[in-house]
Amino acid sequence: MLPGLKAGFTLDTRLEADSEQLMWLGLCELRVMNDRRWPWLLLVPQRPGAEEIHDMTPLDQAMLTFETNMVAQGLKKATGCTKINTGALGNIVRQLHIHVIARSEGDPGWPGPVWGHGLREPYQRSDLRRFAETIKAAL
Amino acid sequence: MLPGLKAGFTLDTRLEADSEQLMWLGLCELRVMNDRRWPWLLLVPQRPGAEEIHDMTPLDQAMLTFETNMVAQGLKKATGCTKINTGALGNIVRQLHIHVIARSEGDPGWPGPVWGHGLREPYQRSDLRRFAETIKAAL
Image 1: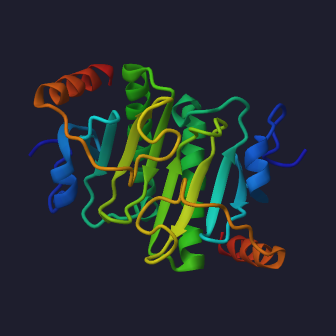
Image 2: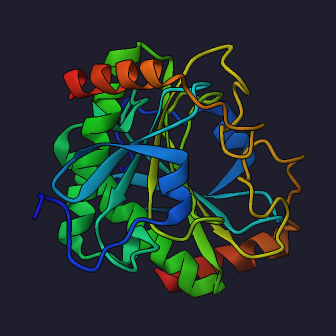
C-alpha cells in the first residue's frame, strides 16, 4: 500500500474532478487544483469522515500544520508570489481539505478571495505537468 | 505587562477598527469581528512583522494551531453552526491574522466565502457584549 493511502479513505468525487494528484505526504494527499488562474494546491488528510480540523487527533493536527506550512513555503518560493492564502472552508465539499494558493497583486479577483470567483479555467496538460514538476522540485 | 502583550507589537489599524478585543491566549490576541452577519473571530499572533504562518518558528506554528483549533471548537459548540471556515489571507491587511467563522446554511453569502461579501454590519453594543460573553464561556 502506498504511504498515505489509508484503508477506508475515498476521495470526494468533486475534489477528484477539479484537481490532480501531485504527491503523498505523511498525512495528506497533495493535489493541484486544475485552474490556471492561480497556482493553487490542496491538502487532503487521509482520514475517513474528517470534516473539521479540530475533530482530528492532536497528532494529526500537528502533522497537518507541518505539511501545510511546508507546502506554503515551497509554493511561495516556486512562484515568488506576494501572499499565500490558506483556507479550510468546506461549505460545498464537506471532506476536509486545505487550500494553499499563491496570490499576486493584479491576479484575477485580487485582493478578494479565489473561492466563488468566476469559473475554473483548466490548464493545458503540458502546463499542468510543468507546474506540478516545479512544485515537486520546490518541496 | 499583560500576558500575550509582546514588546514591539502594534495591532494593525484596520484590524483594530473592524474588530474588538476579546481575550489574550498564549500566542494570540483573540478578537471578535464587529460584523453581526456571521459569528466571526480573529486570532492575531503577537509577533512583530509576521505576515506568513510559515515564517514563524515551529513552536509558534504549533501554538497557533492549538489556539486556532481550540477557538474553532468553542465557536462551533457555542453557535451550533454547520461548518467552521478558517483562513489566513492577508491580501489587504498584511499583519498575520487568522479568521475563524461560524457558517450555517442560508447565512449571508452561503456557501461562498465571507471575505469581500457586501458591507460589514456592526453589532449593537449589547449584542456584541453578549456574543463575547458566550464565546468566553465556551473556551
